Image (cartoon, rainbow, N blue to C red; front, side, top):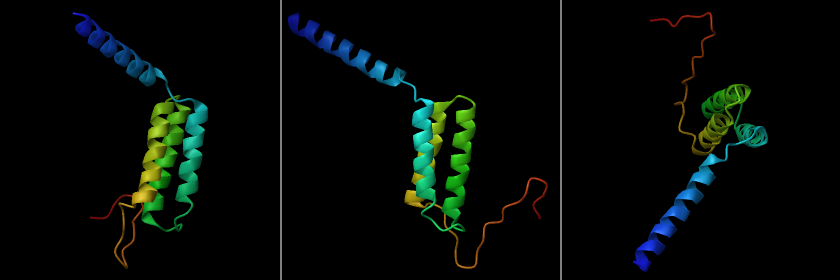
Amino acid sequence: MSRLSAVSLAVLVLTIAVASAHDEEPTQEVCDAAVAEARAQAATLPADDVSRYFAERDIQQALVEAGNGEFDDCVEKAERAVLEVRDRPHSLKPGERLNILRADEMPTR
């Protein structure tokens, strides 16, 4: 029974440790640092690079989340921007271009 008690105690301690680690919410400072890192990474790509475009959209969304006080979502969006720059999942074939519409434009069919 002593062994069972030791295992139960170990499980309880680990559960408390994991729960307390998840309770720590990111702060404004953590969000600001993540956004600054994402901006620095995005700036390494050419201005017309499609991955930079998507990374900048993620950075913009991170700032919106920060403005709403959602610092965990801010950090998540900033991390997504860094992944966009690092992995570059979006690309265009030679001669292709990204058609970005203004808010008042409708797509042609």
